[in-house]
Picture 1 (cartoon, rainbow, N blue to C red):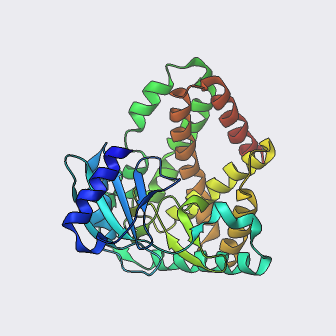
Picture 2: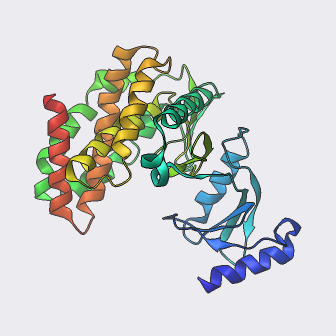
Picture 3: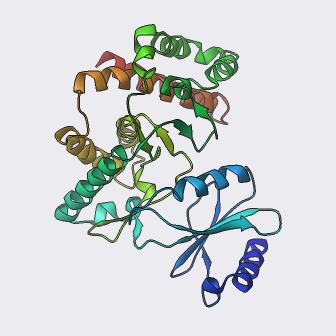
Length: 310
């Protein structure tokens, strides 16, 4: 940690805006070392620095009060760092259960408005910040390196049954064709969980962590949210939902269903069933590489089978 603090001291000498700032390490941040002052955020990334630079370039194309502004990015010694303005508030997972019903409703409303903003920011090509690739169509993004993941999963006998069930969906030609056209491409955040949303207790004040962002299918953030809702309910059933994420997600999904975000609900459901299978495949790939392999695979099998029977 001292190494990062020394890097911040170097930045303070080089950048006048940081001169009088006092930085403390942030509690969150899995892929980054994050430090906060009253006005700024410094993020370091020692591994995969090109990903951070792609995120920087992506954010520079956006202009919205809820999106952090990149003030500087570059190298401090070898690692890459970026500096953003600090948006006010705490992440929703920390405070959701303490909020009044009125303020919860208001925050949900503002999340819907932000989703509408994203869907209206159109682009003319498909691109993933995470992979750094452009794609001919959104199907190519959804099935990128699927073959490699399937090959790894097949080595684990316990995962074979659920894998075969997932591939029945993923290999359906009629469903694949739903993602081959490029009629509309918009901005996708890609990870709108409550850990990435800030609030002052009354309003939505920030949307963080854009490393999974895309120029892609306008429905993709909604697909992610419907999937997160399933996961949150599973955590609730297991008694591990300490942040009341299931309550938040239930309220958000109801609000999405009542909004104009989904233009064609029948088509949306068809598309979601395909994308959901790709999400489960990615989760299964993670599970077969995890320490709790058997437990994690069993949990995925239960969750996948339960939805298919409903």
